[in-house]
Each structure stands twice: as C-alpha cells, then as structure tokens.
Image (cartoon, rainbow, N blue to C red; front, side, top):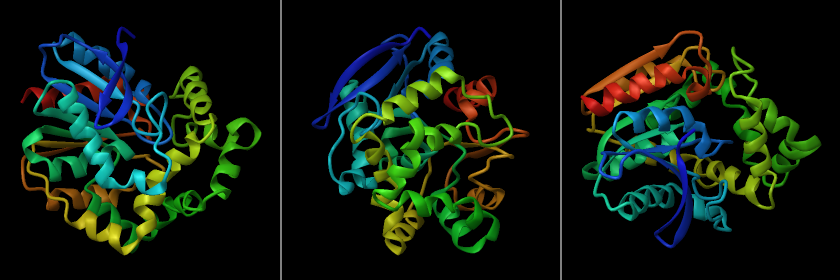
Length: 289
C-alpha cells in the first residue's frame, strides 16, 4: 500500500488517517465499519490515487490511533456526522465524495442527508437506506434473525467480556463469517483485533451501537428522516450474513436522486477485501459520473 499516515486535527479531535493521491485531486473520504479501521480501504486507496483522486480513510473516533472520547453519548450520530464535516474542512475542502462500509455506511447515509451541499456522491457498502434497515429489522423475520448479535453488543460489560475472551477469539471469528472465510487476510485481522484489545477501544467501538441502536424508537425516527439527493450507489453482497435483501430492495423507493444498486453474487460482508476490484469499479463509476 502506498498510502501515507497523517494525524489530522478536526473539530477538537485527532484522527489518524491514511492518505493517497495528489493534493489537488477531488476528495474521496472512506469510512470503515465495525470492527475494522482505515486499513479496510487499502486496495481502494491505491486505486483511487492512481486515478488522480485524493483518497483519505480515517480511523473513526474511538478506533485505531484516533482519539477516543469517553462516554456513550460521544458516539451519537450527530457527533459522527460532525466528524465527517470536520475532516473535510480540515483537509481544506468544502465537499467530498463519501463512501462507507457497515457503520461507516450508516454515517455516510446520515451525512449525505444532513450535509447535502458537502456530499458530491455517496457509495454505501452492505448497508441500505437507514429507514429500510430499521423497517426490515422490525418486520422481516430473516433480518431480525440476522440482527440478533446486536442484543449482545448493547450489553455493557458482557459484550466486552464475550468478544475479548481467549485473545479476542469471538471478535476474530466475525471476519470468517459468510461465504469467504479467508477473505480478510490474517494480517488485517491481527491488526484490527490487536487495536481493539487496547484499553477502552472495544467499548468505544461498541458505543456506536449503544449510543444509536440503544435508543429504540428515537433511532427509528432519526433513520426515517434520512433524505438523500446526492448520486448514490449501494453495493451489497447477496451472501451477507448480517444484512438481508429486504432492506436492499426497499432502498430504491426512499431515494431522491440518481441511484444504482450493484449486487455482488456470492459475496458476503467484507466487500473491500472479498471483491476489491468490483468495489473500485463501483467507486470509480460513481465518482466520475
């Protein structure tokens, strides 16, 4: 990977970022999910840089070497959206192409809705429109079954104990779920698990769930307020063990601007690792057109 590491001060927090590409290029900001870090975008950083874009992937708040605010409320969606805005401004820009996977995709959806003038395009991996996801989790038995793990994640203390036991074995096992158990290279798994094994880091990552999903009806109401007009692509693996087809199909009816769905047959959840070439293609098609 040719990306270089930079610490960026943004909105009172320090973010560790991986940066690749010419400073004059259009900015593509890529947001990772649970339980990963900036390295999840390694293949895409290089490809976008080679195409002339300024590609930036941060460790999101609480992850990696970025600052770790202490309270659950510090991870509410309002704060996460502000982080994206502050990073864009700290990079000297007024807008960016936004991409996100897993939790990064949720943040990207909300950012595109709340900061439309700052969102040139949106590329969401794995996670459809937040309102579609909420409705599927409530009304679709298949999605309810897929989402059962969240019940554990909301339990302070117990989730940390279960996920960190035996050298983070349960957390490491998450990367092997789905149709391609070896898709995420061992070195990446070791890095992500080792990072979250540091004091407070696993709790910070779980606080994304607790600060948002833990609010039940209030979270559902926020999700239904999301309105995105930016040109958007949703990329979903049809063997994703966590996110089923119902929310994916419902997303189109909630869009206000140009929208495309790319279904990767045989792919699971870790799309940047499983299908790096296809993810690069989807990103390039969206940010160029």
